[in-house]
Amino acid sequence: MKRREFLSTAALTVGGALLSTSHHRAFGYLANETIGIAVIGCGGMGTGHLNELVSRKETSNVSVRAVCDVYQRRLSRAKSISGAEGYLDYRKLLERSDLDAVLIATPDHWHSKIAIDALDAGKHVYVEKPMTHTVEQALALRDAVTRSGKILEVGPQATGNDSYWKAHDAIKAGRIGKVTWGHGCYNRNARICLFNEHQKIDPTAGPDKSGDDFVDWDMWLGHKWGLAPKIPWNPEHFFRFRKYWPYNGGVATDLLYHKLSPMLLAIAGPNGEYPSRVSAGGGLYIEKDGRDIPDTFLMTVDYPSEFSLFLASTLTNDDGIPDRIYGKYGTMELGGEPLLRANGEMAPEFKKANEDKAEVRIPVEPRPDMKDNFLKAIRGEGTLHCNVHLGASTMVAIKMAVESYRQKKTLQFDAATGKVIG
Image (cartoon, rainbow, N blue to C red; front, side, top):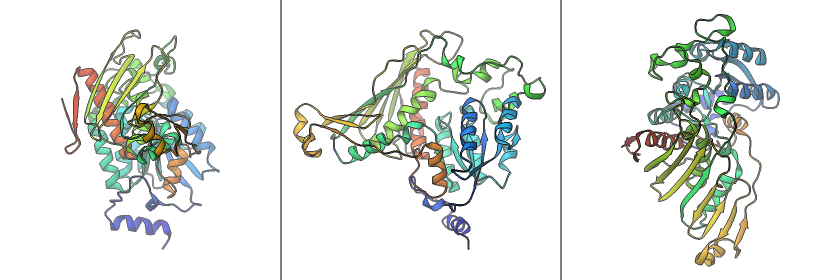
């Protein structure tokens, strides 16, 4: 029996319940097998991924065999880049038997449905951050991964930074004492907001147009599946979806997901931890262009393991606060080589845990980038940078923060029932 057939049989024998959350050796492909992949969502981010995958054809033994987008111009561009077959409807793409995996780079409100459909079709999934659009979708996708026995990786880049993995080892070893809190931020500032400048509107596009100008607006909204409300064609919503609640969570889901996931990795470990209480504030103070989302967003998350995180994101000033974790014995700076420093009267305890030194730098090592990490995991090599559990626990806290801001109240999460309590 071929190794690939044996592994498939073994997976079925245990009902697909392959519960390893970090190591995926049960999913190996032979090193010389080509991984067939499709890209679903070929806007700016998706096209960037597509170009990378095409460039890795030889080095990673991966073949882009299909591309999909509801906007014909983007689909035509993706076909010309990859030479792959194009689809306006991703469901037709998932019927192909020559696809091992899909990469999803659609607007957020489509992430969970496409990912679950792909898993059910027997495909591995790489999904851009944020993992989903709602708490309920995050938990459903988490359960779908377990049910399917397939690999899913979420794409926050910083989880592939060895600094946070080394930080977790140091925290687990007690080198800064009991962690009680941490903070970080992701800020931007531009004369023209990047949510406008990077998402330019094509005035010729629309659902009533033909050829490359055609947009399947009803499919993009997803109102048939309850993904977003049905509204008339709105190019501002289509091209600049990050500004509007039905499709996105603003800076929280677009930027702070990048911060919370690696901070959770460092403190709680590769599977993250679900929050117990979340609150958020801020406002729309400058970018008053009809958007829903705030330009200044501040969130605080409390965790059952007795630590709290404060995260901030603003589009009005790009100075910020560092990624920092505070323990009883010392403080840890993150991002590059983790820097550990003794704190106050607890210096003796810190030194005892750190070779009698009051300040220590921890060397870091190169790690595979996110897509290389995903492809290696499919082949049974290594550990996912952001598995579905870290992705889901991050998503729950981020979405709760969005709802806390919108509802102007603190929210709690019951991990046993998966319910948000307001």
